[in-house]
Length: 134
Image (cartoon, rainbow, N blue to C red; front, side):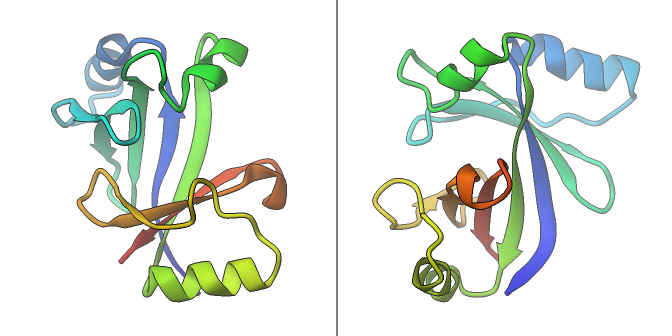
């Protein structure tokens, strides 16, 4: 069911500072900030050849990552994203096996313009998992 690792997401309290760190210290190419109001975050991507790093900061007070940053003020790894060939089939298979899909269970459009779902971290060894339609 799982395809390739699409990205590893790191929640940050200051996207501009984190982008500068990756760009200036590590020599990475960083995309322009992309606000995603439906997800409550602003993101940038860093291409590392075989995958990407996503840096995300809260967008508004009701952000989905505000609680994470309250517990981890310096930021930290937020989730991993895997590609799947058929997101609806993957969702149905996971739900049938007892995994919890967050939200209403319907895919939302993610930062790459493709449908995404999130799986409850308690079902995956404490790791929030995002699935993205390949």
